[in-house]
Picture 1: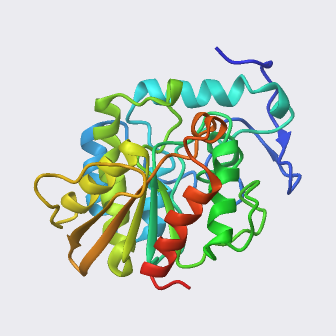
Picture 2: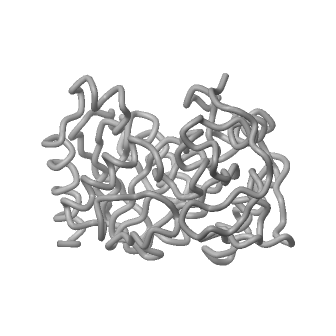
Picture 3: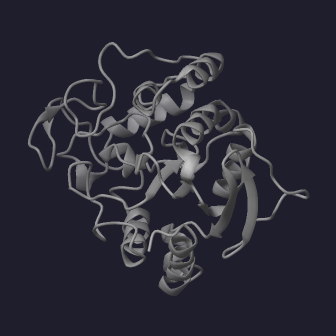
Length: 286
């Protein structure tokens, strides 16, 4: 299923040089790791709901989400991918755990994607970092004044986001980039909790792909907000207004910056710049 070879433990992080196992045990010093060896672990959908509802801070939420083991198929896949690595990354340790959201703790713009890539965020531990989709996304964000650099390489590269937070609807890398309906449902409370903890100043949500669009609508609704009826349909450049507890929020649709979409021309640089330029202006980030 994967190219490459099974690597030995204790490989050096490509930037810091610190040694790590794959997957990375919590609390061992990985850049940005929010968890410790004592962080509570959710092992069932019911525990995800209870822990997400009880999270009193973003730090607690990120820590507990980053060690979640509630979806056996996803746990197996993310950890197998962390051991059987892509050949080009065979000398690197892989994060191999659920990937937290990243960016401003009180954003004005939230970007909702699908899930980590097996050799991207599942490797680096930072959402949309380390693969071609992330290269395209962060370059567009930089052009729109939403990121300090066009390059997102690893969790210790110094990149920062400006008034913006990036999250994934499903936090573990799924086989074939396709989580099951049950896996989506199990992971959804983490996203709702993150919305409730960080979203009080959000004015714009950019949804990447149809799944990101549905997840964003569900997130707002589950967080006590209101969504128009009939439910707005996804499309690139589509716009809808939803109501959150703090007021109206504009939801913008954008084709997912996957290689399939960018290589075929379905999603162009100009199309990305149009969406993110509009998002930044509506959110009053620039």
